Length: 326
Ligand SMILES: NC(=O)c1ccc[n+]([C@@H]2O[C@H](COP(=O)([O-])OP(=O)(O)OC[C@H]3O[C@@H](n4cnc5c(N)ncnc54)[C@H](OP(=O)(O)O)[C@@H]3O)[C@@H](O)[C@H]2O)c1
Image 1: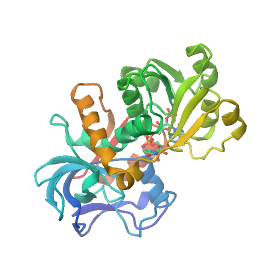
Image 2 (image 1 turned 45 degrees about the vertical axis):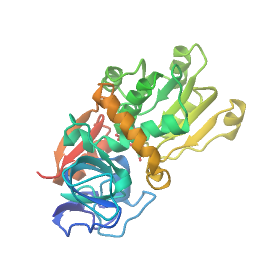
Image 3 (image 1 turned 90 degrees about the vertical axis):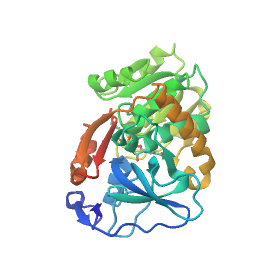
Image 4 (image 1 turned 90 degrees about the horizontal axis):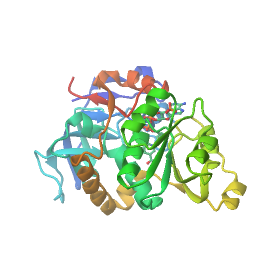
């Protein structure tokens, strides 16, 4: 099969399409004929050798795919050949075929196309899990989303709005802010030119946000910590800005703040039963129009290095998706 191969950590420009053996199908797994693969920031970190997991070289990057089930391994009862599915995997998605654990394979909505489905599971799964399982978000609460026009950020805007929250979306630039508004944000902050803390305080009668969703880290985390309400919650999602923030424990104490880490991938192995009900709910919201995923760039398989460049330059909104068969 054709797949993107990473032969050397750190060498994004050397990522190239190669002919490789199909992955073997094991018990409890599903073999998928992949039609499209989502691009994720973490995949770029994996290729750079900066991710928490380091697959043995050479490897095929790719955390999420959409396609048609070709075969299932022993013991799998939740999927069958011919099913249209989306799936999450540790790596291996930028390929014409991939295997995923059956617990991380989810049915596509009947009206969903492969490109939309390929970018759905990680962004929306992360947003849902963070708000529902960790922050236990309640209707009427105010949520501040950082990097709100990005892959996981825009999903967080839509999911928080679907859960009945008032969403303040923080993003860099007027166009990105307008996009978040079209996807459910009540208010926006252009954090390239506005002071995040002052704006959030003005929008909340001085109280601050009840919940902060932060996939950006760096200085944005420090500013958001000052914009969180007394007894609020901060969800640590990622570090797209490149630096891991240090947390001033005195602020956490004085404001009674809960700082919560959330890693969606770990739920695939530790709490798979939660994923099934989460995806049923998310697909329901997609079907009734509450979730409207954005794919700003649809590219061919060989364009993976170009996709990473767009992420680094903050030019993508919503998701970038590779079509694996062109
Ligand atoms: N915890 C989890 O389970 C989980 C799941 C998925 C993703 N993540 C993490 O979440 C982060 C975002 O992932 P994503 O796939 O949503 O990425 P993305 O689509 O590239 O979005 C990241 C956003 O961060 C902002 N940003 C600020 N500084 C940046 C910089 N120096 N370079 C690039 N972007 C910058 C950009 O928005 P502005 O231009 O508006 O600032 C951009 O839209 C990553 O760290 C990823 O590993 C975590």
